[in-house]
Image (cartoon, rainbow, N blue to C red; front, side, top):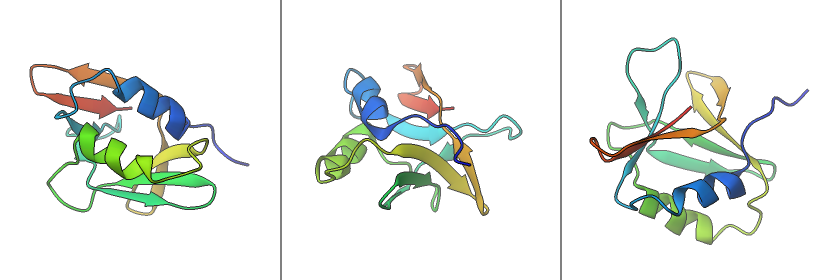
Length: 102
């Protein structure tokens, strides 16, 4: 069974009103620190965000990449260490100029 996660189209909609220079991170409740989102992988039925480097993507970069994708009505997940995490929303941190996906 597929686990519920936010749709890419909804995530992009939430990001549109945020400063496009903000960097994107993912927070997993059992970890102390946030994972920088550095890579975006598209398949036919989902979008995977992952952390392969210490340099996070910006909202501008994510929106630019996603403009080229026709099917945005797919679920978005964060993947690390062979485990996929659902994304339910985002927190904006203006003082750090970043958004945290949760």
